Each structure stands twice: as structure tokens, then as C-alpha cells.
Image (cartoon, rainbow, N blue to C red; front, side, top):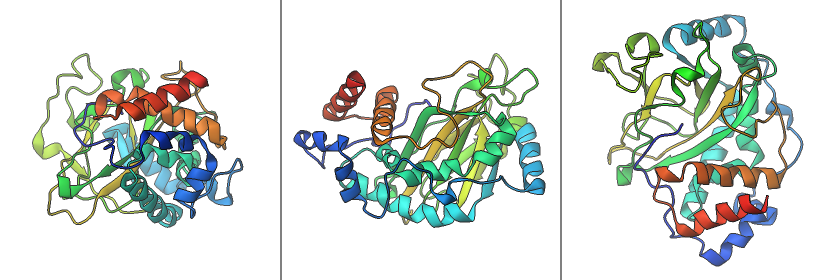
Amino acid sequence: MVEEADSVFFTPAGPNPGDFRLWVTEEHWRALCPELTLSTTLPPNARSNGLGADAMSRARARMRLEGYFGEHDPELERLAPRLADAVSRLVRAGIPAPFLFVYDEAWTAFHRMSGLLADLLGPDYRVLPDFWAWHVDPAAEQAGWRPHRDKGGKALRADGTPISLTIWIPLSDSNPLNGCMYMLPANRDPAYNTPEEDKWQIDLPSVRALPGAPGDFFCWNQAVLHWGARSSRFGEKPRISMAMEFQRADEAPFNQPLIAPLTALPFAARIRLIAKQIVQYQHMYPLSPEVAAFARAVLGAS
């Protein structure tokens, strides 16, 4: 998830710098999106037993061959519109979209992946402190992140099984006109998991579009080549989405702090993690000096 992009991260058209002190108060976020919650307990819908035997078998087979798979979760279909609306509200207020992760529901969406993550990464897998949310606006012909491999071949074991994974969730309809994800399947990528992985050899007919709807999710290993397309002004609505990364617990951490599965983080910890995202990805977007200063202040005080 670390690559350059040209979509806008933050335009200082919303809160003025004097408002940033409110960003560390729960009351501010409750008032902004009152339909979402902030708590320290997991809701009943936060757990999933996985995909079922047949779907899980197919997912494992696709992961081995192509490096990714896509599935659908009815509970995500119910959560996604609320989360998409929250992202839109954040963007209108001039607040970076990753602040979506201040809310329980953003974490719940990924907690629901616990069953399949345990199957793919081991029951004691860990959540990496690497996540993001996007609002790609077709009216401005914005684009998602450019072609990249999240971590490359170091994210694979010697037998090709994943050490770490990314789960990407479209919160609104995602299609070629509003910048859906594209993937070069592992078995169609001659540079995949080789010392030449940074020298892309893209066979254009092998590129696969990943259109999605609320309720869908996509999971890929962190060595596959993928990107978010540039949107078209003819796209009807923004592409709103979010992603989070995970890794095996029996391998050295790719980033810290690692988070145990199904952890309900307290509010202050969420704010620190969001500030960490702003700092570690600040090379990717035009970033307001005020937001950068806010993030550094939060991390410096933690």
C-alpha cells in the first residue's frame, strides 16, 4: 500500500487550524457522524466464521495461482453505505478520509474477515498498522494509487504462501469509470516474486479489472502488481473504499505496533494510528502543513 499517487489527500477547505484541537475529542466525531459509534467493545456482527468450506477452498486455490480473490459478505453490504456516507462527510468537511477509522464500523468490517485471515495466515495472525480510505472523484478525474506491489516478494514464504495480505473493500460501486482496482494476476506476471519484480512486464490482455459493489471485498498477497485506475468525468459517483493489511504472527513484523485480532481499540489509540498513517504516507498526497503538524503532535504526545 505504499506508492505514489496523484489523487488529492487533503484540501484545506474545511476546518481551520484552530479546529484541530477538536479532532482529539470523541464528541467531535460523534457529532460529525452520529449514525456511527465509538466504543471499546466488539459488536455482535464483528465476528465471522469464514467463507464456508467450498468458498474457502476456491479462495485458497485462487490465492495460490493468481495471488488474489474476491468474495461477498452480506453484513458488509449493510455496513458499506453508512461508511461511504461518513467518508463523503469527512471529505466535505476537509478532513482526511482515513479518519473513517476513528469509528467502530470501519474496524468491524475488517474484524469480519477474521475467519478467512486465520485460515490464510494462521489463527494468531496480526493486524498491521497500515490502513487507508479513499474518495476518488470522477468529476475531478482523480485516480487511485499507481501500479505497485505492497511489499513485494519479501511478503511471500519460500513455498509462495503469503506472509502478509491486503484486504480492500469498496464502500460504493466501483467500476472502470470511477477508478476501480486493476490486478495483474500472479500467474500472468513474469516478474512476480523474482529479483526483477520492480521491472514490470505487463501483458495488457492479462490485466484484470476488479469492479465491485457494496458488500464485496478483495484479498491479495502483497507481492501482486495492482493499481487504482484514473476515473472518467463520465463516472456517476465517487469511488469510495478502504483497505487494511495483515500478517502472520510467526514472522518478523513489517511495521509496528502489531495488533491482535478482534481488538477493540480505545479512541486515543485509533487517533494515534490514524496520525501514523498520515505521517507514513505523506509522500503520496499534497498535504496541508496544518494536518501534518497535527499528526506529528499526536505522535509526539503519545
